[in-house]
Image 1 (cartoon, rainbow, N blue to C red):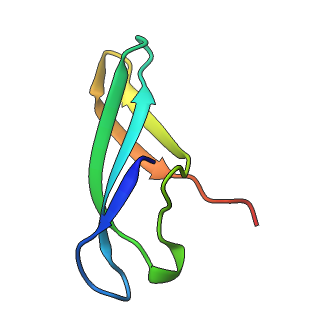
Image 2: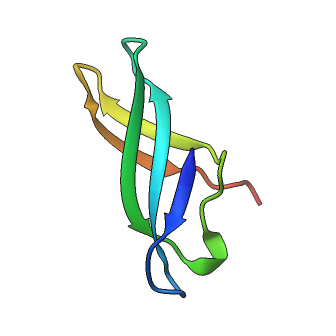
Length: 70
């Protein structure tokens, strides 16, 4: 995860997240999305994420932020 910006509700803020990844074809890609997070579990700069994308179209991608093991 590259960065996050707070934009709404204090108990579950909506954040803009940027994830950078390398596609199967070796190209560097950037994925941006907005999602609500509980205030006690906000994403952090540098947090790892899992990105799934279609190998024939790396712009068709979904991302899930990885959780730290407890």
